[in-house]
Length: 131
Image 1: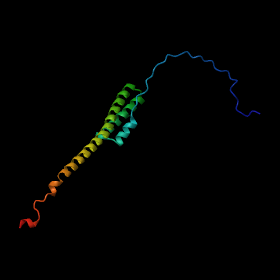
Image 2: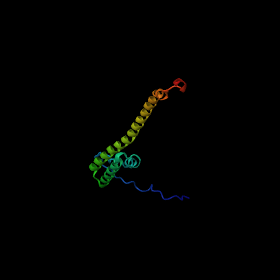
Image 3: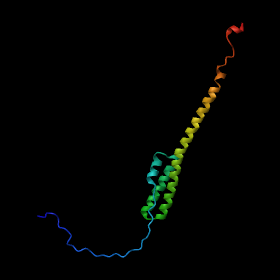
Image 4: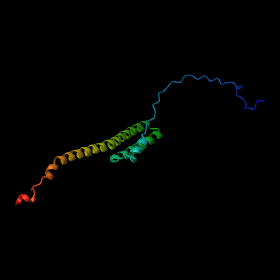
């Protein structure tokens, strides 16, 4: 007893012969860099560049949804540039500041070690020498 659903083997196969259509290379839609912009806005907002990148990312997404691919590419390119600047500024400047602080501490410690003799010099000996 066969309890399975009716099989469709008995249906004739449609014979649709497709003619080869000309291939059109469609470029992928532009990236809007929205996640990177949100990250830069929340965590690394150096000189408000993350916020500016977020604004261009939203504009790029809006233009992409509207179908204006060229404007979406322009806004996407600007968002990428502002994101790169925000990320570089937020990474490079603290490293530069840390390097300056470390070199300043090293310089001050050497200076303090060299001047220890000046601060420990006794101008007058003991009271016995005065007599």
